[in-house]
Length: 239
Image (cartoon, rainbow, N blue to C red; front, top):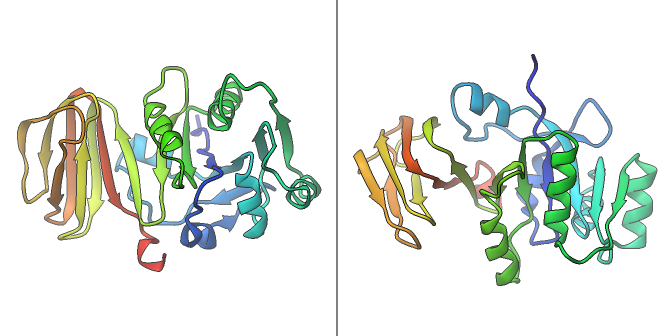
């Protein structure tokens, strides 16, 4: 059975322009090929994340896509930030507009609910960086939200990969810098890093581990809790 493609959701934040410049239109209107090589896992889970899929926008994120001449498959939100020019352009290119005027959820939450209802179990998120600290903190709280698609964040220079319990194996260049965080605490095994070991404890909060890769494969086995891996984006040097 083929994997469900992974959509890319663009928020109304500071757009990673180097990422958008490397997106390629897909075989269907409103779909894109994600730029490679994204540092995703070896094995079934990594393969699922690397399957290209539809391009979604949360409200004003559609303005960013309009400026980059990237048609969305779907635009979700209360649409109060969407310009008329962007609205007409996306509709002309086949986008669905899902206007959700209720204010109990923010536009990201509205988009995640619609993605889940459409059968998507994972989602890349871009354009999350901006001037609203409350929105950024709110996004981190949604990374492990029950019932929502699993999220991975694409930033201007870095990407954030939440890791569920189990083994995760990433190809990585020698001396590449990376960090590990565990907002709620975590225990893991780490191999392929300058500072590795078994049964490492990450305390809750901002106590993380900054590290360097030995090169080849970085192997993380999350034994308890969840970890967040922060890595360089492959387009970061272009930003």
